Each structure stands twice: as structure tokens, then as C-alpha cells.
Figure 1 (cartoon, helix red, strand yellow):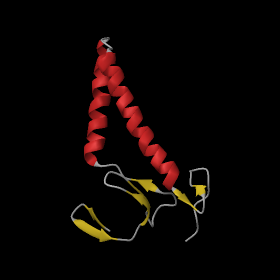
Figure 2: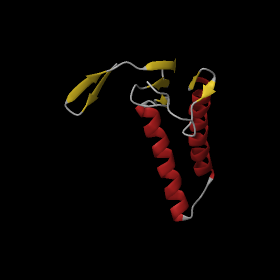
Figure 3: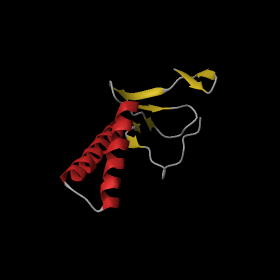
Figure 4: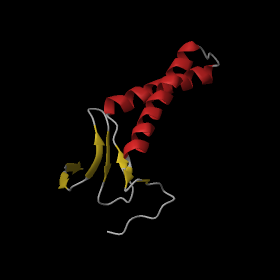
Length: 104
């Protein structure tokens, strides 16, 4: 994998636990726990829906559209979380911040 950091590109290998067209669960060599990727368009859509919901709450004009937007974001995040729980594992153990990092 090549990662561009500012004007410099860096190549390193990642261990991929799961991937499809919209999300990857992988372990970077510099992290002790798996990471999850989210496509930029999905992230932008969730942010847009949250911003819309916040505007409704601030204006006191909460309606069904706000409920729909909030439910959409919740469902999208729940989907990512479910994929992470299913595939962000190593040796059958979900890796969480409560567990020590593996020595390399």
C-alpha cells in the first residue's frame, strides 16, 4: 500500500482482515489494533446528515426528516461497527483498547 503524507509517499504493508468496495478492516504496522476505513463519500454524507440534524435541533424545528437523518447515520455507523466486530479480530479475540498491544 502506498500512503501519501503531504508531498511524500510512503509504502508499507498492512494486514487486511476484511474488505469490500466500501470498507476495509486492517492492521497497520504502527498500530496495535485494527483500523477501519470509510469511503470519503460515505463520511461526507453522514456529516451532512448530522449537520442538518443539528440545525433542526438548534432552531427548535425537529421533524421527521431529522429523525430520518439521525437514524441513517446511526444505521451506517452500526453497519461499520458490526463489520469491525466481525472482522477486526486476531486469533479469535476482538482487539480493544483494554487489551495490551502485541509485541512485534
